[in-house]
Image (cartoon, rainbow, N blue to C red; front, side, top):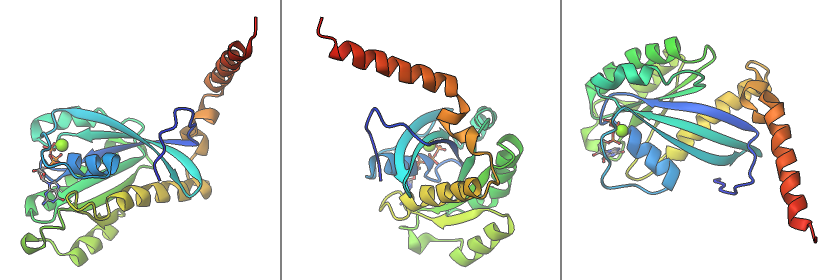
Length: 216
Ligand SMILES: Nc1nc2c(ncn2[C@@H]2O[C@H](COP(=O)(O)OP(=O)(O)OP(=O)(O)O)[C@@H](O)[C@H]2O)c(=O)[nH]1
Ligand SMILES: [Mg+2]
């Protein structure tokens, strides 16, 4: 599903943000999603870190811009400033930690107050490899998130279970809204949003290819 070709022009650019209490596994999940392998040592996030990934999903070329925020309370006001233009919020809790589950309401509030009005929320119950330590049942979490109008999935950043699916399901929801005309397509399409820059890019490419074929 991934693409790394430099010439690859995305049809859509979506901005996602990862939020949730500290140590729930946000950075570990993102590392797995980007590198397709788990990392044994993950540094606690300080402030906010940026990653991006190109992928092809259902014949659409998509660029994801992902902001990984620090869950520690002292960084929370910094994280809030990164919600601008965010279309997808991934809220991570740890299925072995009740406090991280109880904090979801506050994180949803943050996302809906500071993100775009049509922002979609995906709640993730992470660390399902630690099944003996589970304190929140899947049924309970699923019911709660349905009531909060949020998508829900359970993952493990250690085994990689459902990590890709988490991002895919959120992309799917956004693409469905675009297809149904419920959100403005042009806003996420770099060529339609900024035709002038695309035009310039095409002209630059033309100039480059001309200079390459010049025999003088
Ligand atoms: N068993 C298990 N451990 C995990 C999983 N995901 C993350 N961890 C561990 O949990 C700890 C915290 O992971 P991080 O990815 O740093 O958590 P974070 O949410 O980014 O934390 P902050 O950056 O402080 O907000 C690390 O020791 C990870 O190795 C998982 O799915 N299963
Ligand atoms: Mg982190």
